[in-house]
Image 1 (cartoon, rainbow, N blue to C red):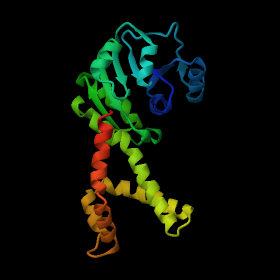
Image 2: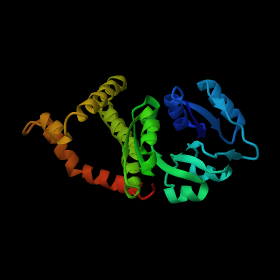
Image 3: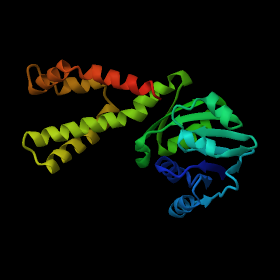
Image 4: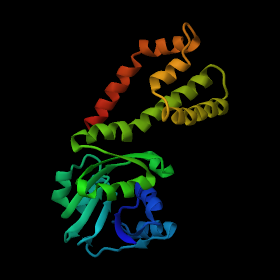
Length: 246
């Protein structure tokens, strides 16, 4: 069983550890010993306590799951075999300046990792592409990209769940506004999203729309109203805004 050093103990680190603990020997380290111990006790993992924040990485594989600013809190000693990073907006070149390694992989999972339904964007050294897929497919599906497209993929896969949450909230509130109980409105929207995601895997969204959009019907009236308020343009601008910060 290969060893993987997990740096961090947040929500994404937990999702990855849960998906990988039967495939890798995971050593967990971070800045707070109490949090490390609690994390390891919860998941039955091995803590790795650091002296003077120094981590020996020679010939090891390291998975960075900390906030970008926290990277400066560690001293990485030696040369790792591969560094995997989920640090937002930290390029491969920036990783090379922070950690010495033979290979580098950038990854951007999303919030659905907690239920093993993430779509994770990957880029970096193609020599470690297979290993990267092995790790991040443990929390869902993965896609390999050129790094120049990474910020856009981050906006679309990483930020857009918040946009969909806003859509869900708006639909629920609309049901309540016009007479449904919040419980009934919430159940309708939850089931709507669940069923729609399965349909979307099989059918193009244009065809899904056409299937429920009869000429002159209620759906057509609703779609026309959304178009009048430039819904597509709003999403285009939202993705661009998120991309520029990713």
